[in-house]
Image 1 (tube, helix red, strand yellow):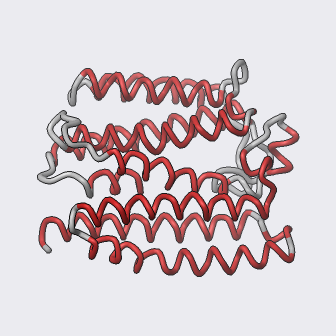
Image 2: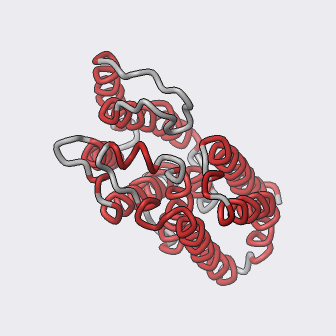
Length: 269
């Protein structure tokens, strides 16, 4: 949802019927199908993806993901065939990431790039297109880049407690490549680049106040991140499931509130 709200904050006026449809397609069909297929391929026995004790996936889960994918692709045509093609491209990339015959997630850099381009840049473009009356005219390149870097700064931290289970599954994630301490430093760098890009964008648009509004919402995230980083630096076992879920919840909530506030300011400010 953060990337969705982020992309929406760049569109004015917003085509609300298409935006609502895009929201449902992405969050009720695309993401659940992608996560479900990944779980089916992983067959995790330890805490993963926000679930401490995951149930073993069944064949029914696989069929459910197929139904969701087909339904989502068909419904995407109500926006446009171009949107449907982008939707289908996301599905293909997601499957290549998870499918055991290819398994891009085995490779730290390739898997990481697949995620940030898919969940960041592509989703940003899809939302912008749907909300902007099926047009990519004036789509901000900085917005596309910032979306990728925001996901790039968020994703490795979600992998930090899964090192053992990923290694046992033959997967080498970006977080494993970087190490637990390195993951924090890398994520902080990605976020710094994202915010530097946003600073440039808002400065060029004479909307610097919007940039500082964003910073207010990210203060709790930064405080928690730095506090947790210092704890993990002393004791790497604290890079665990519980702390990761707290970080995820706080970051997602604050990010959503920040970009929703920007949308409201554009309309009522």
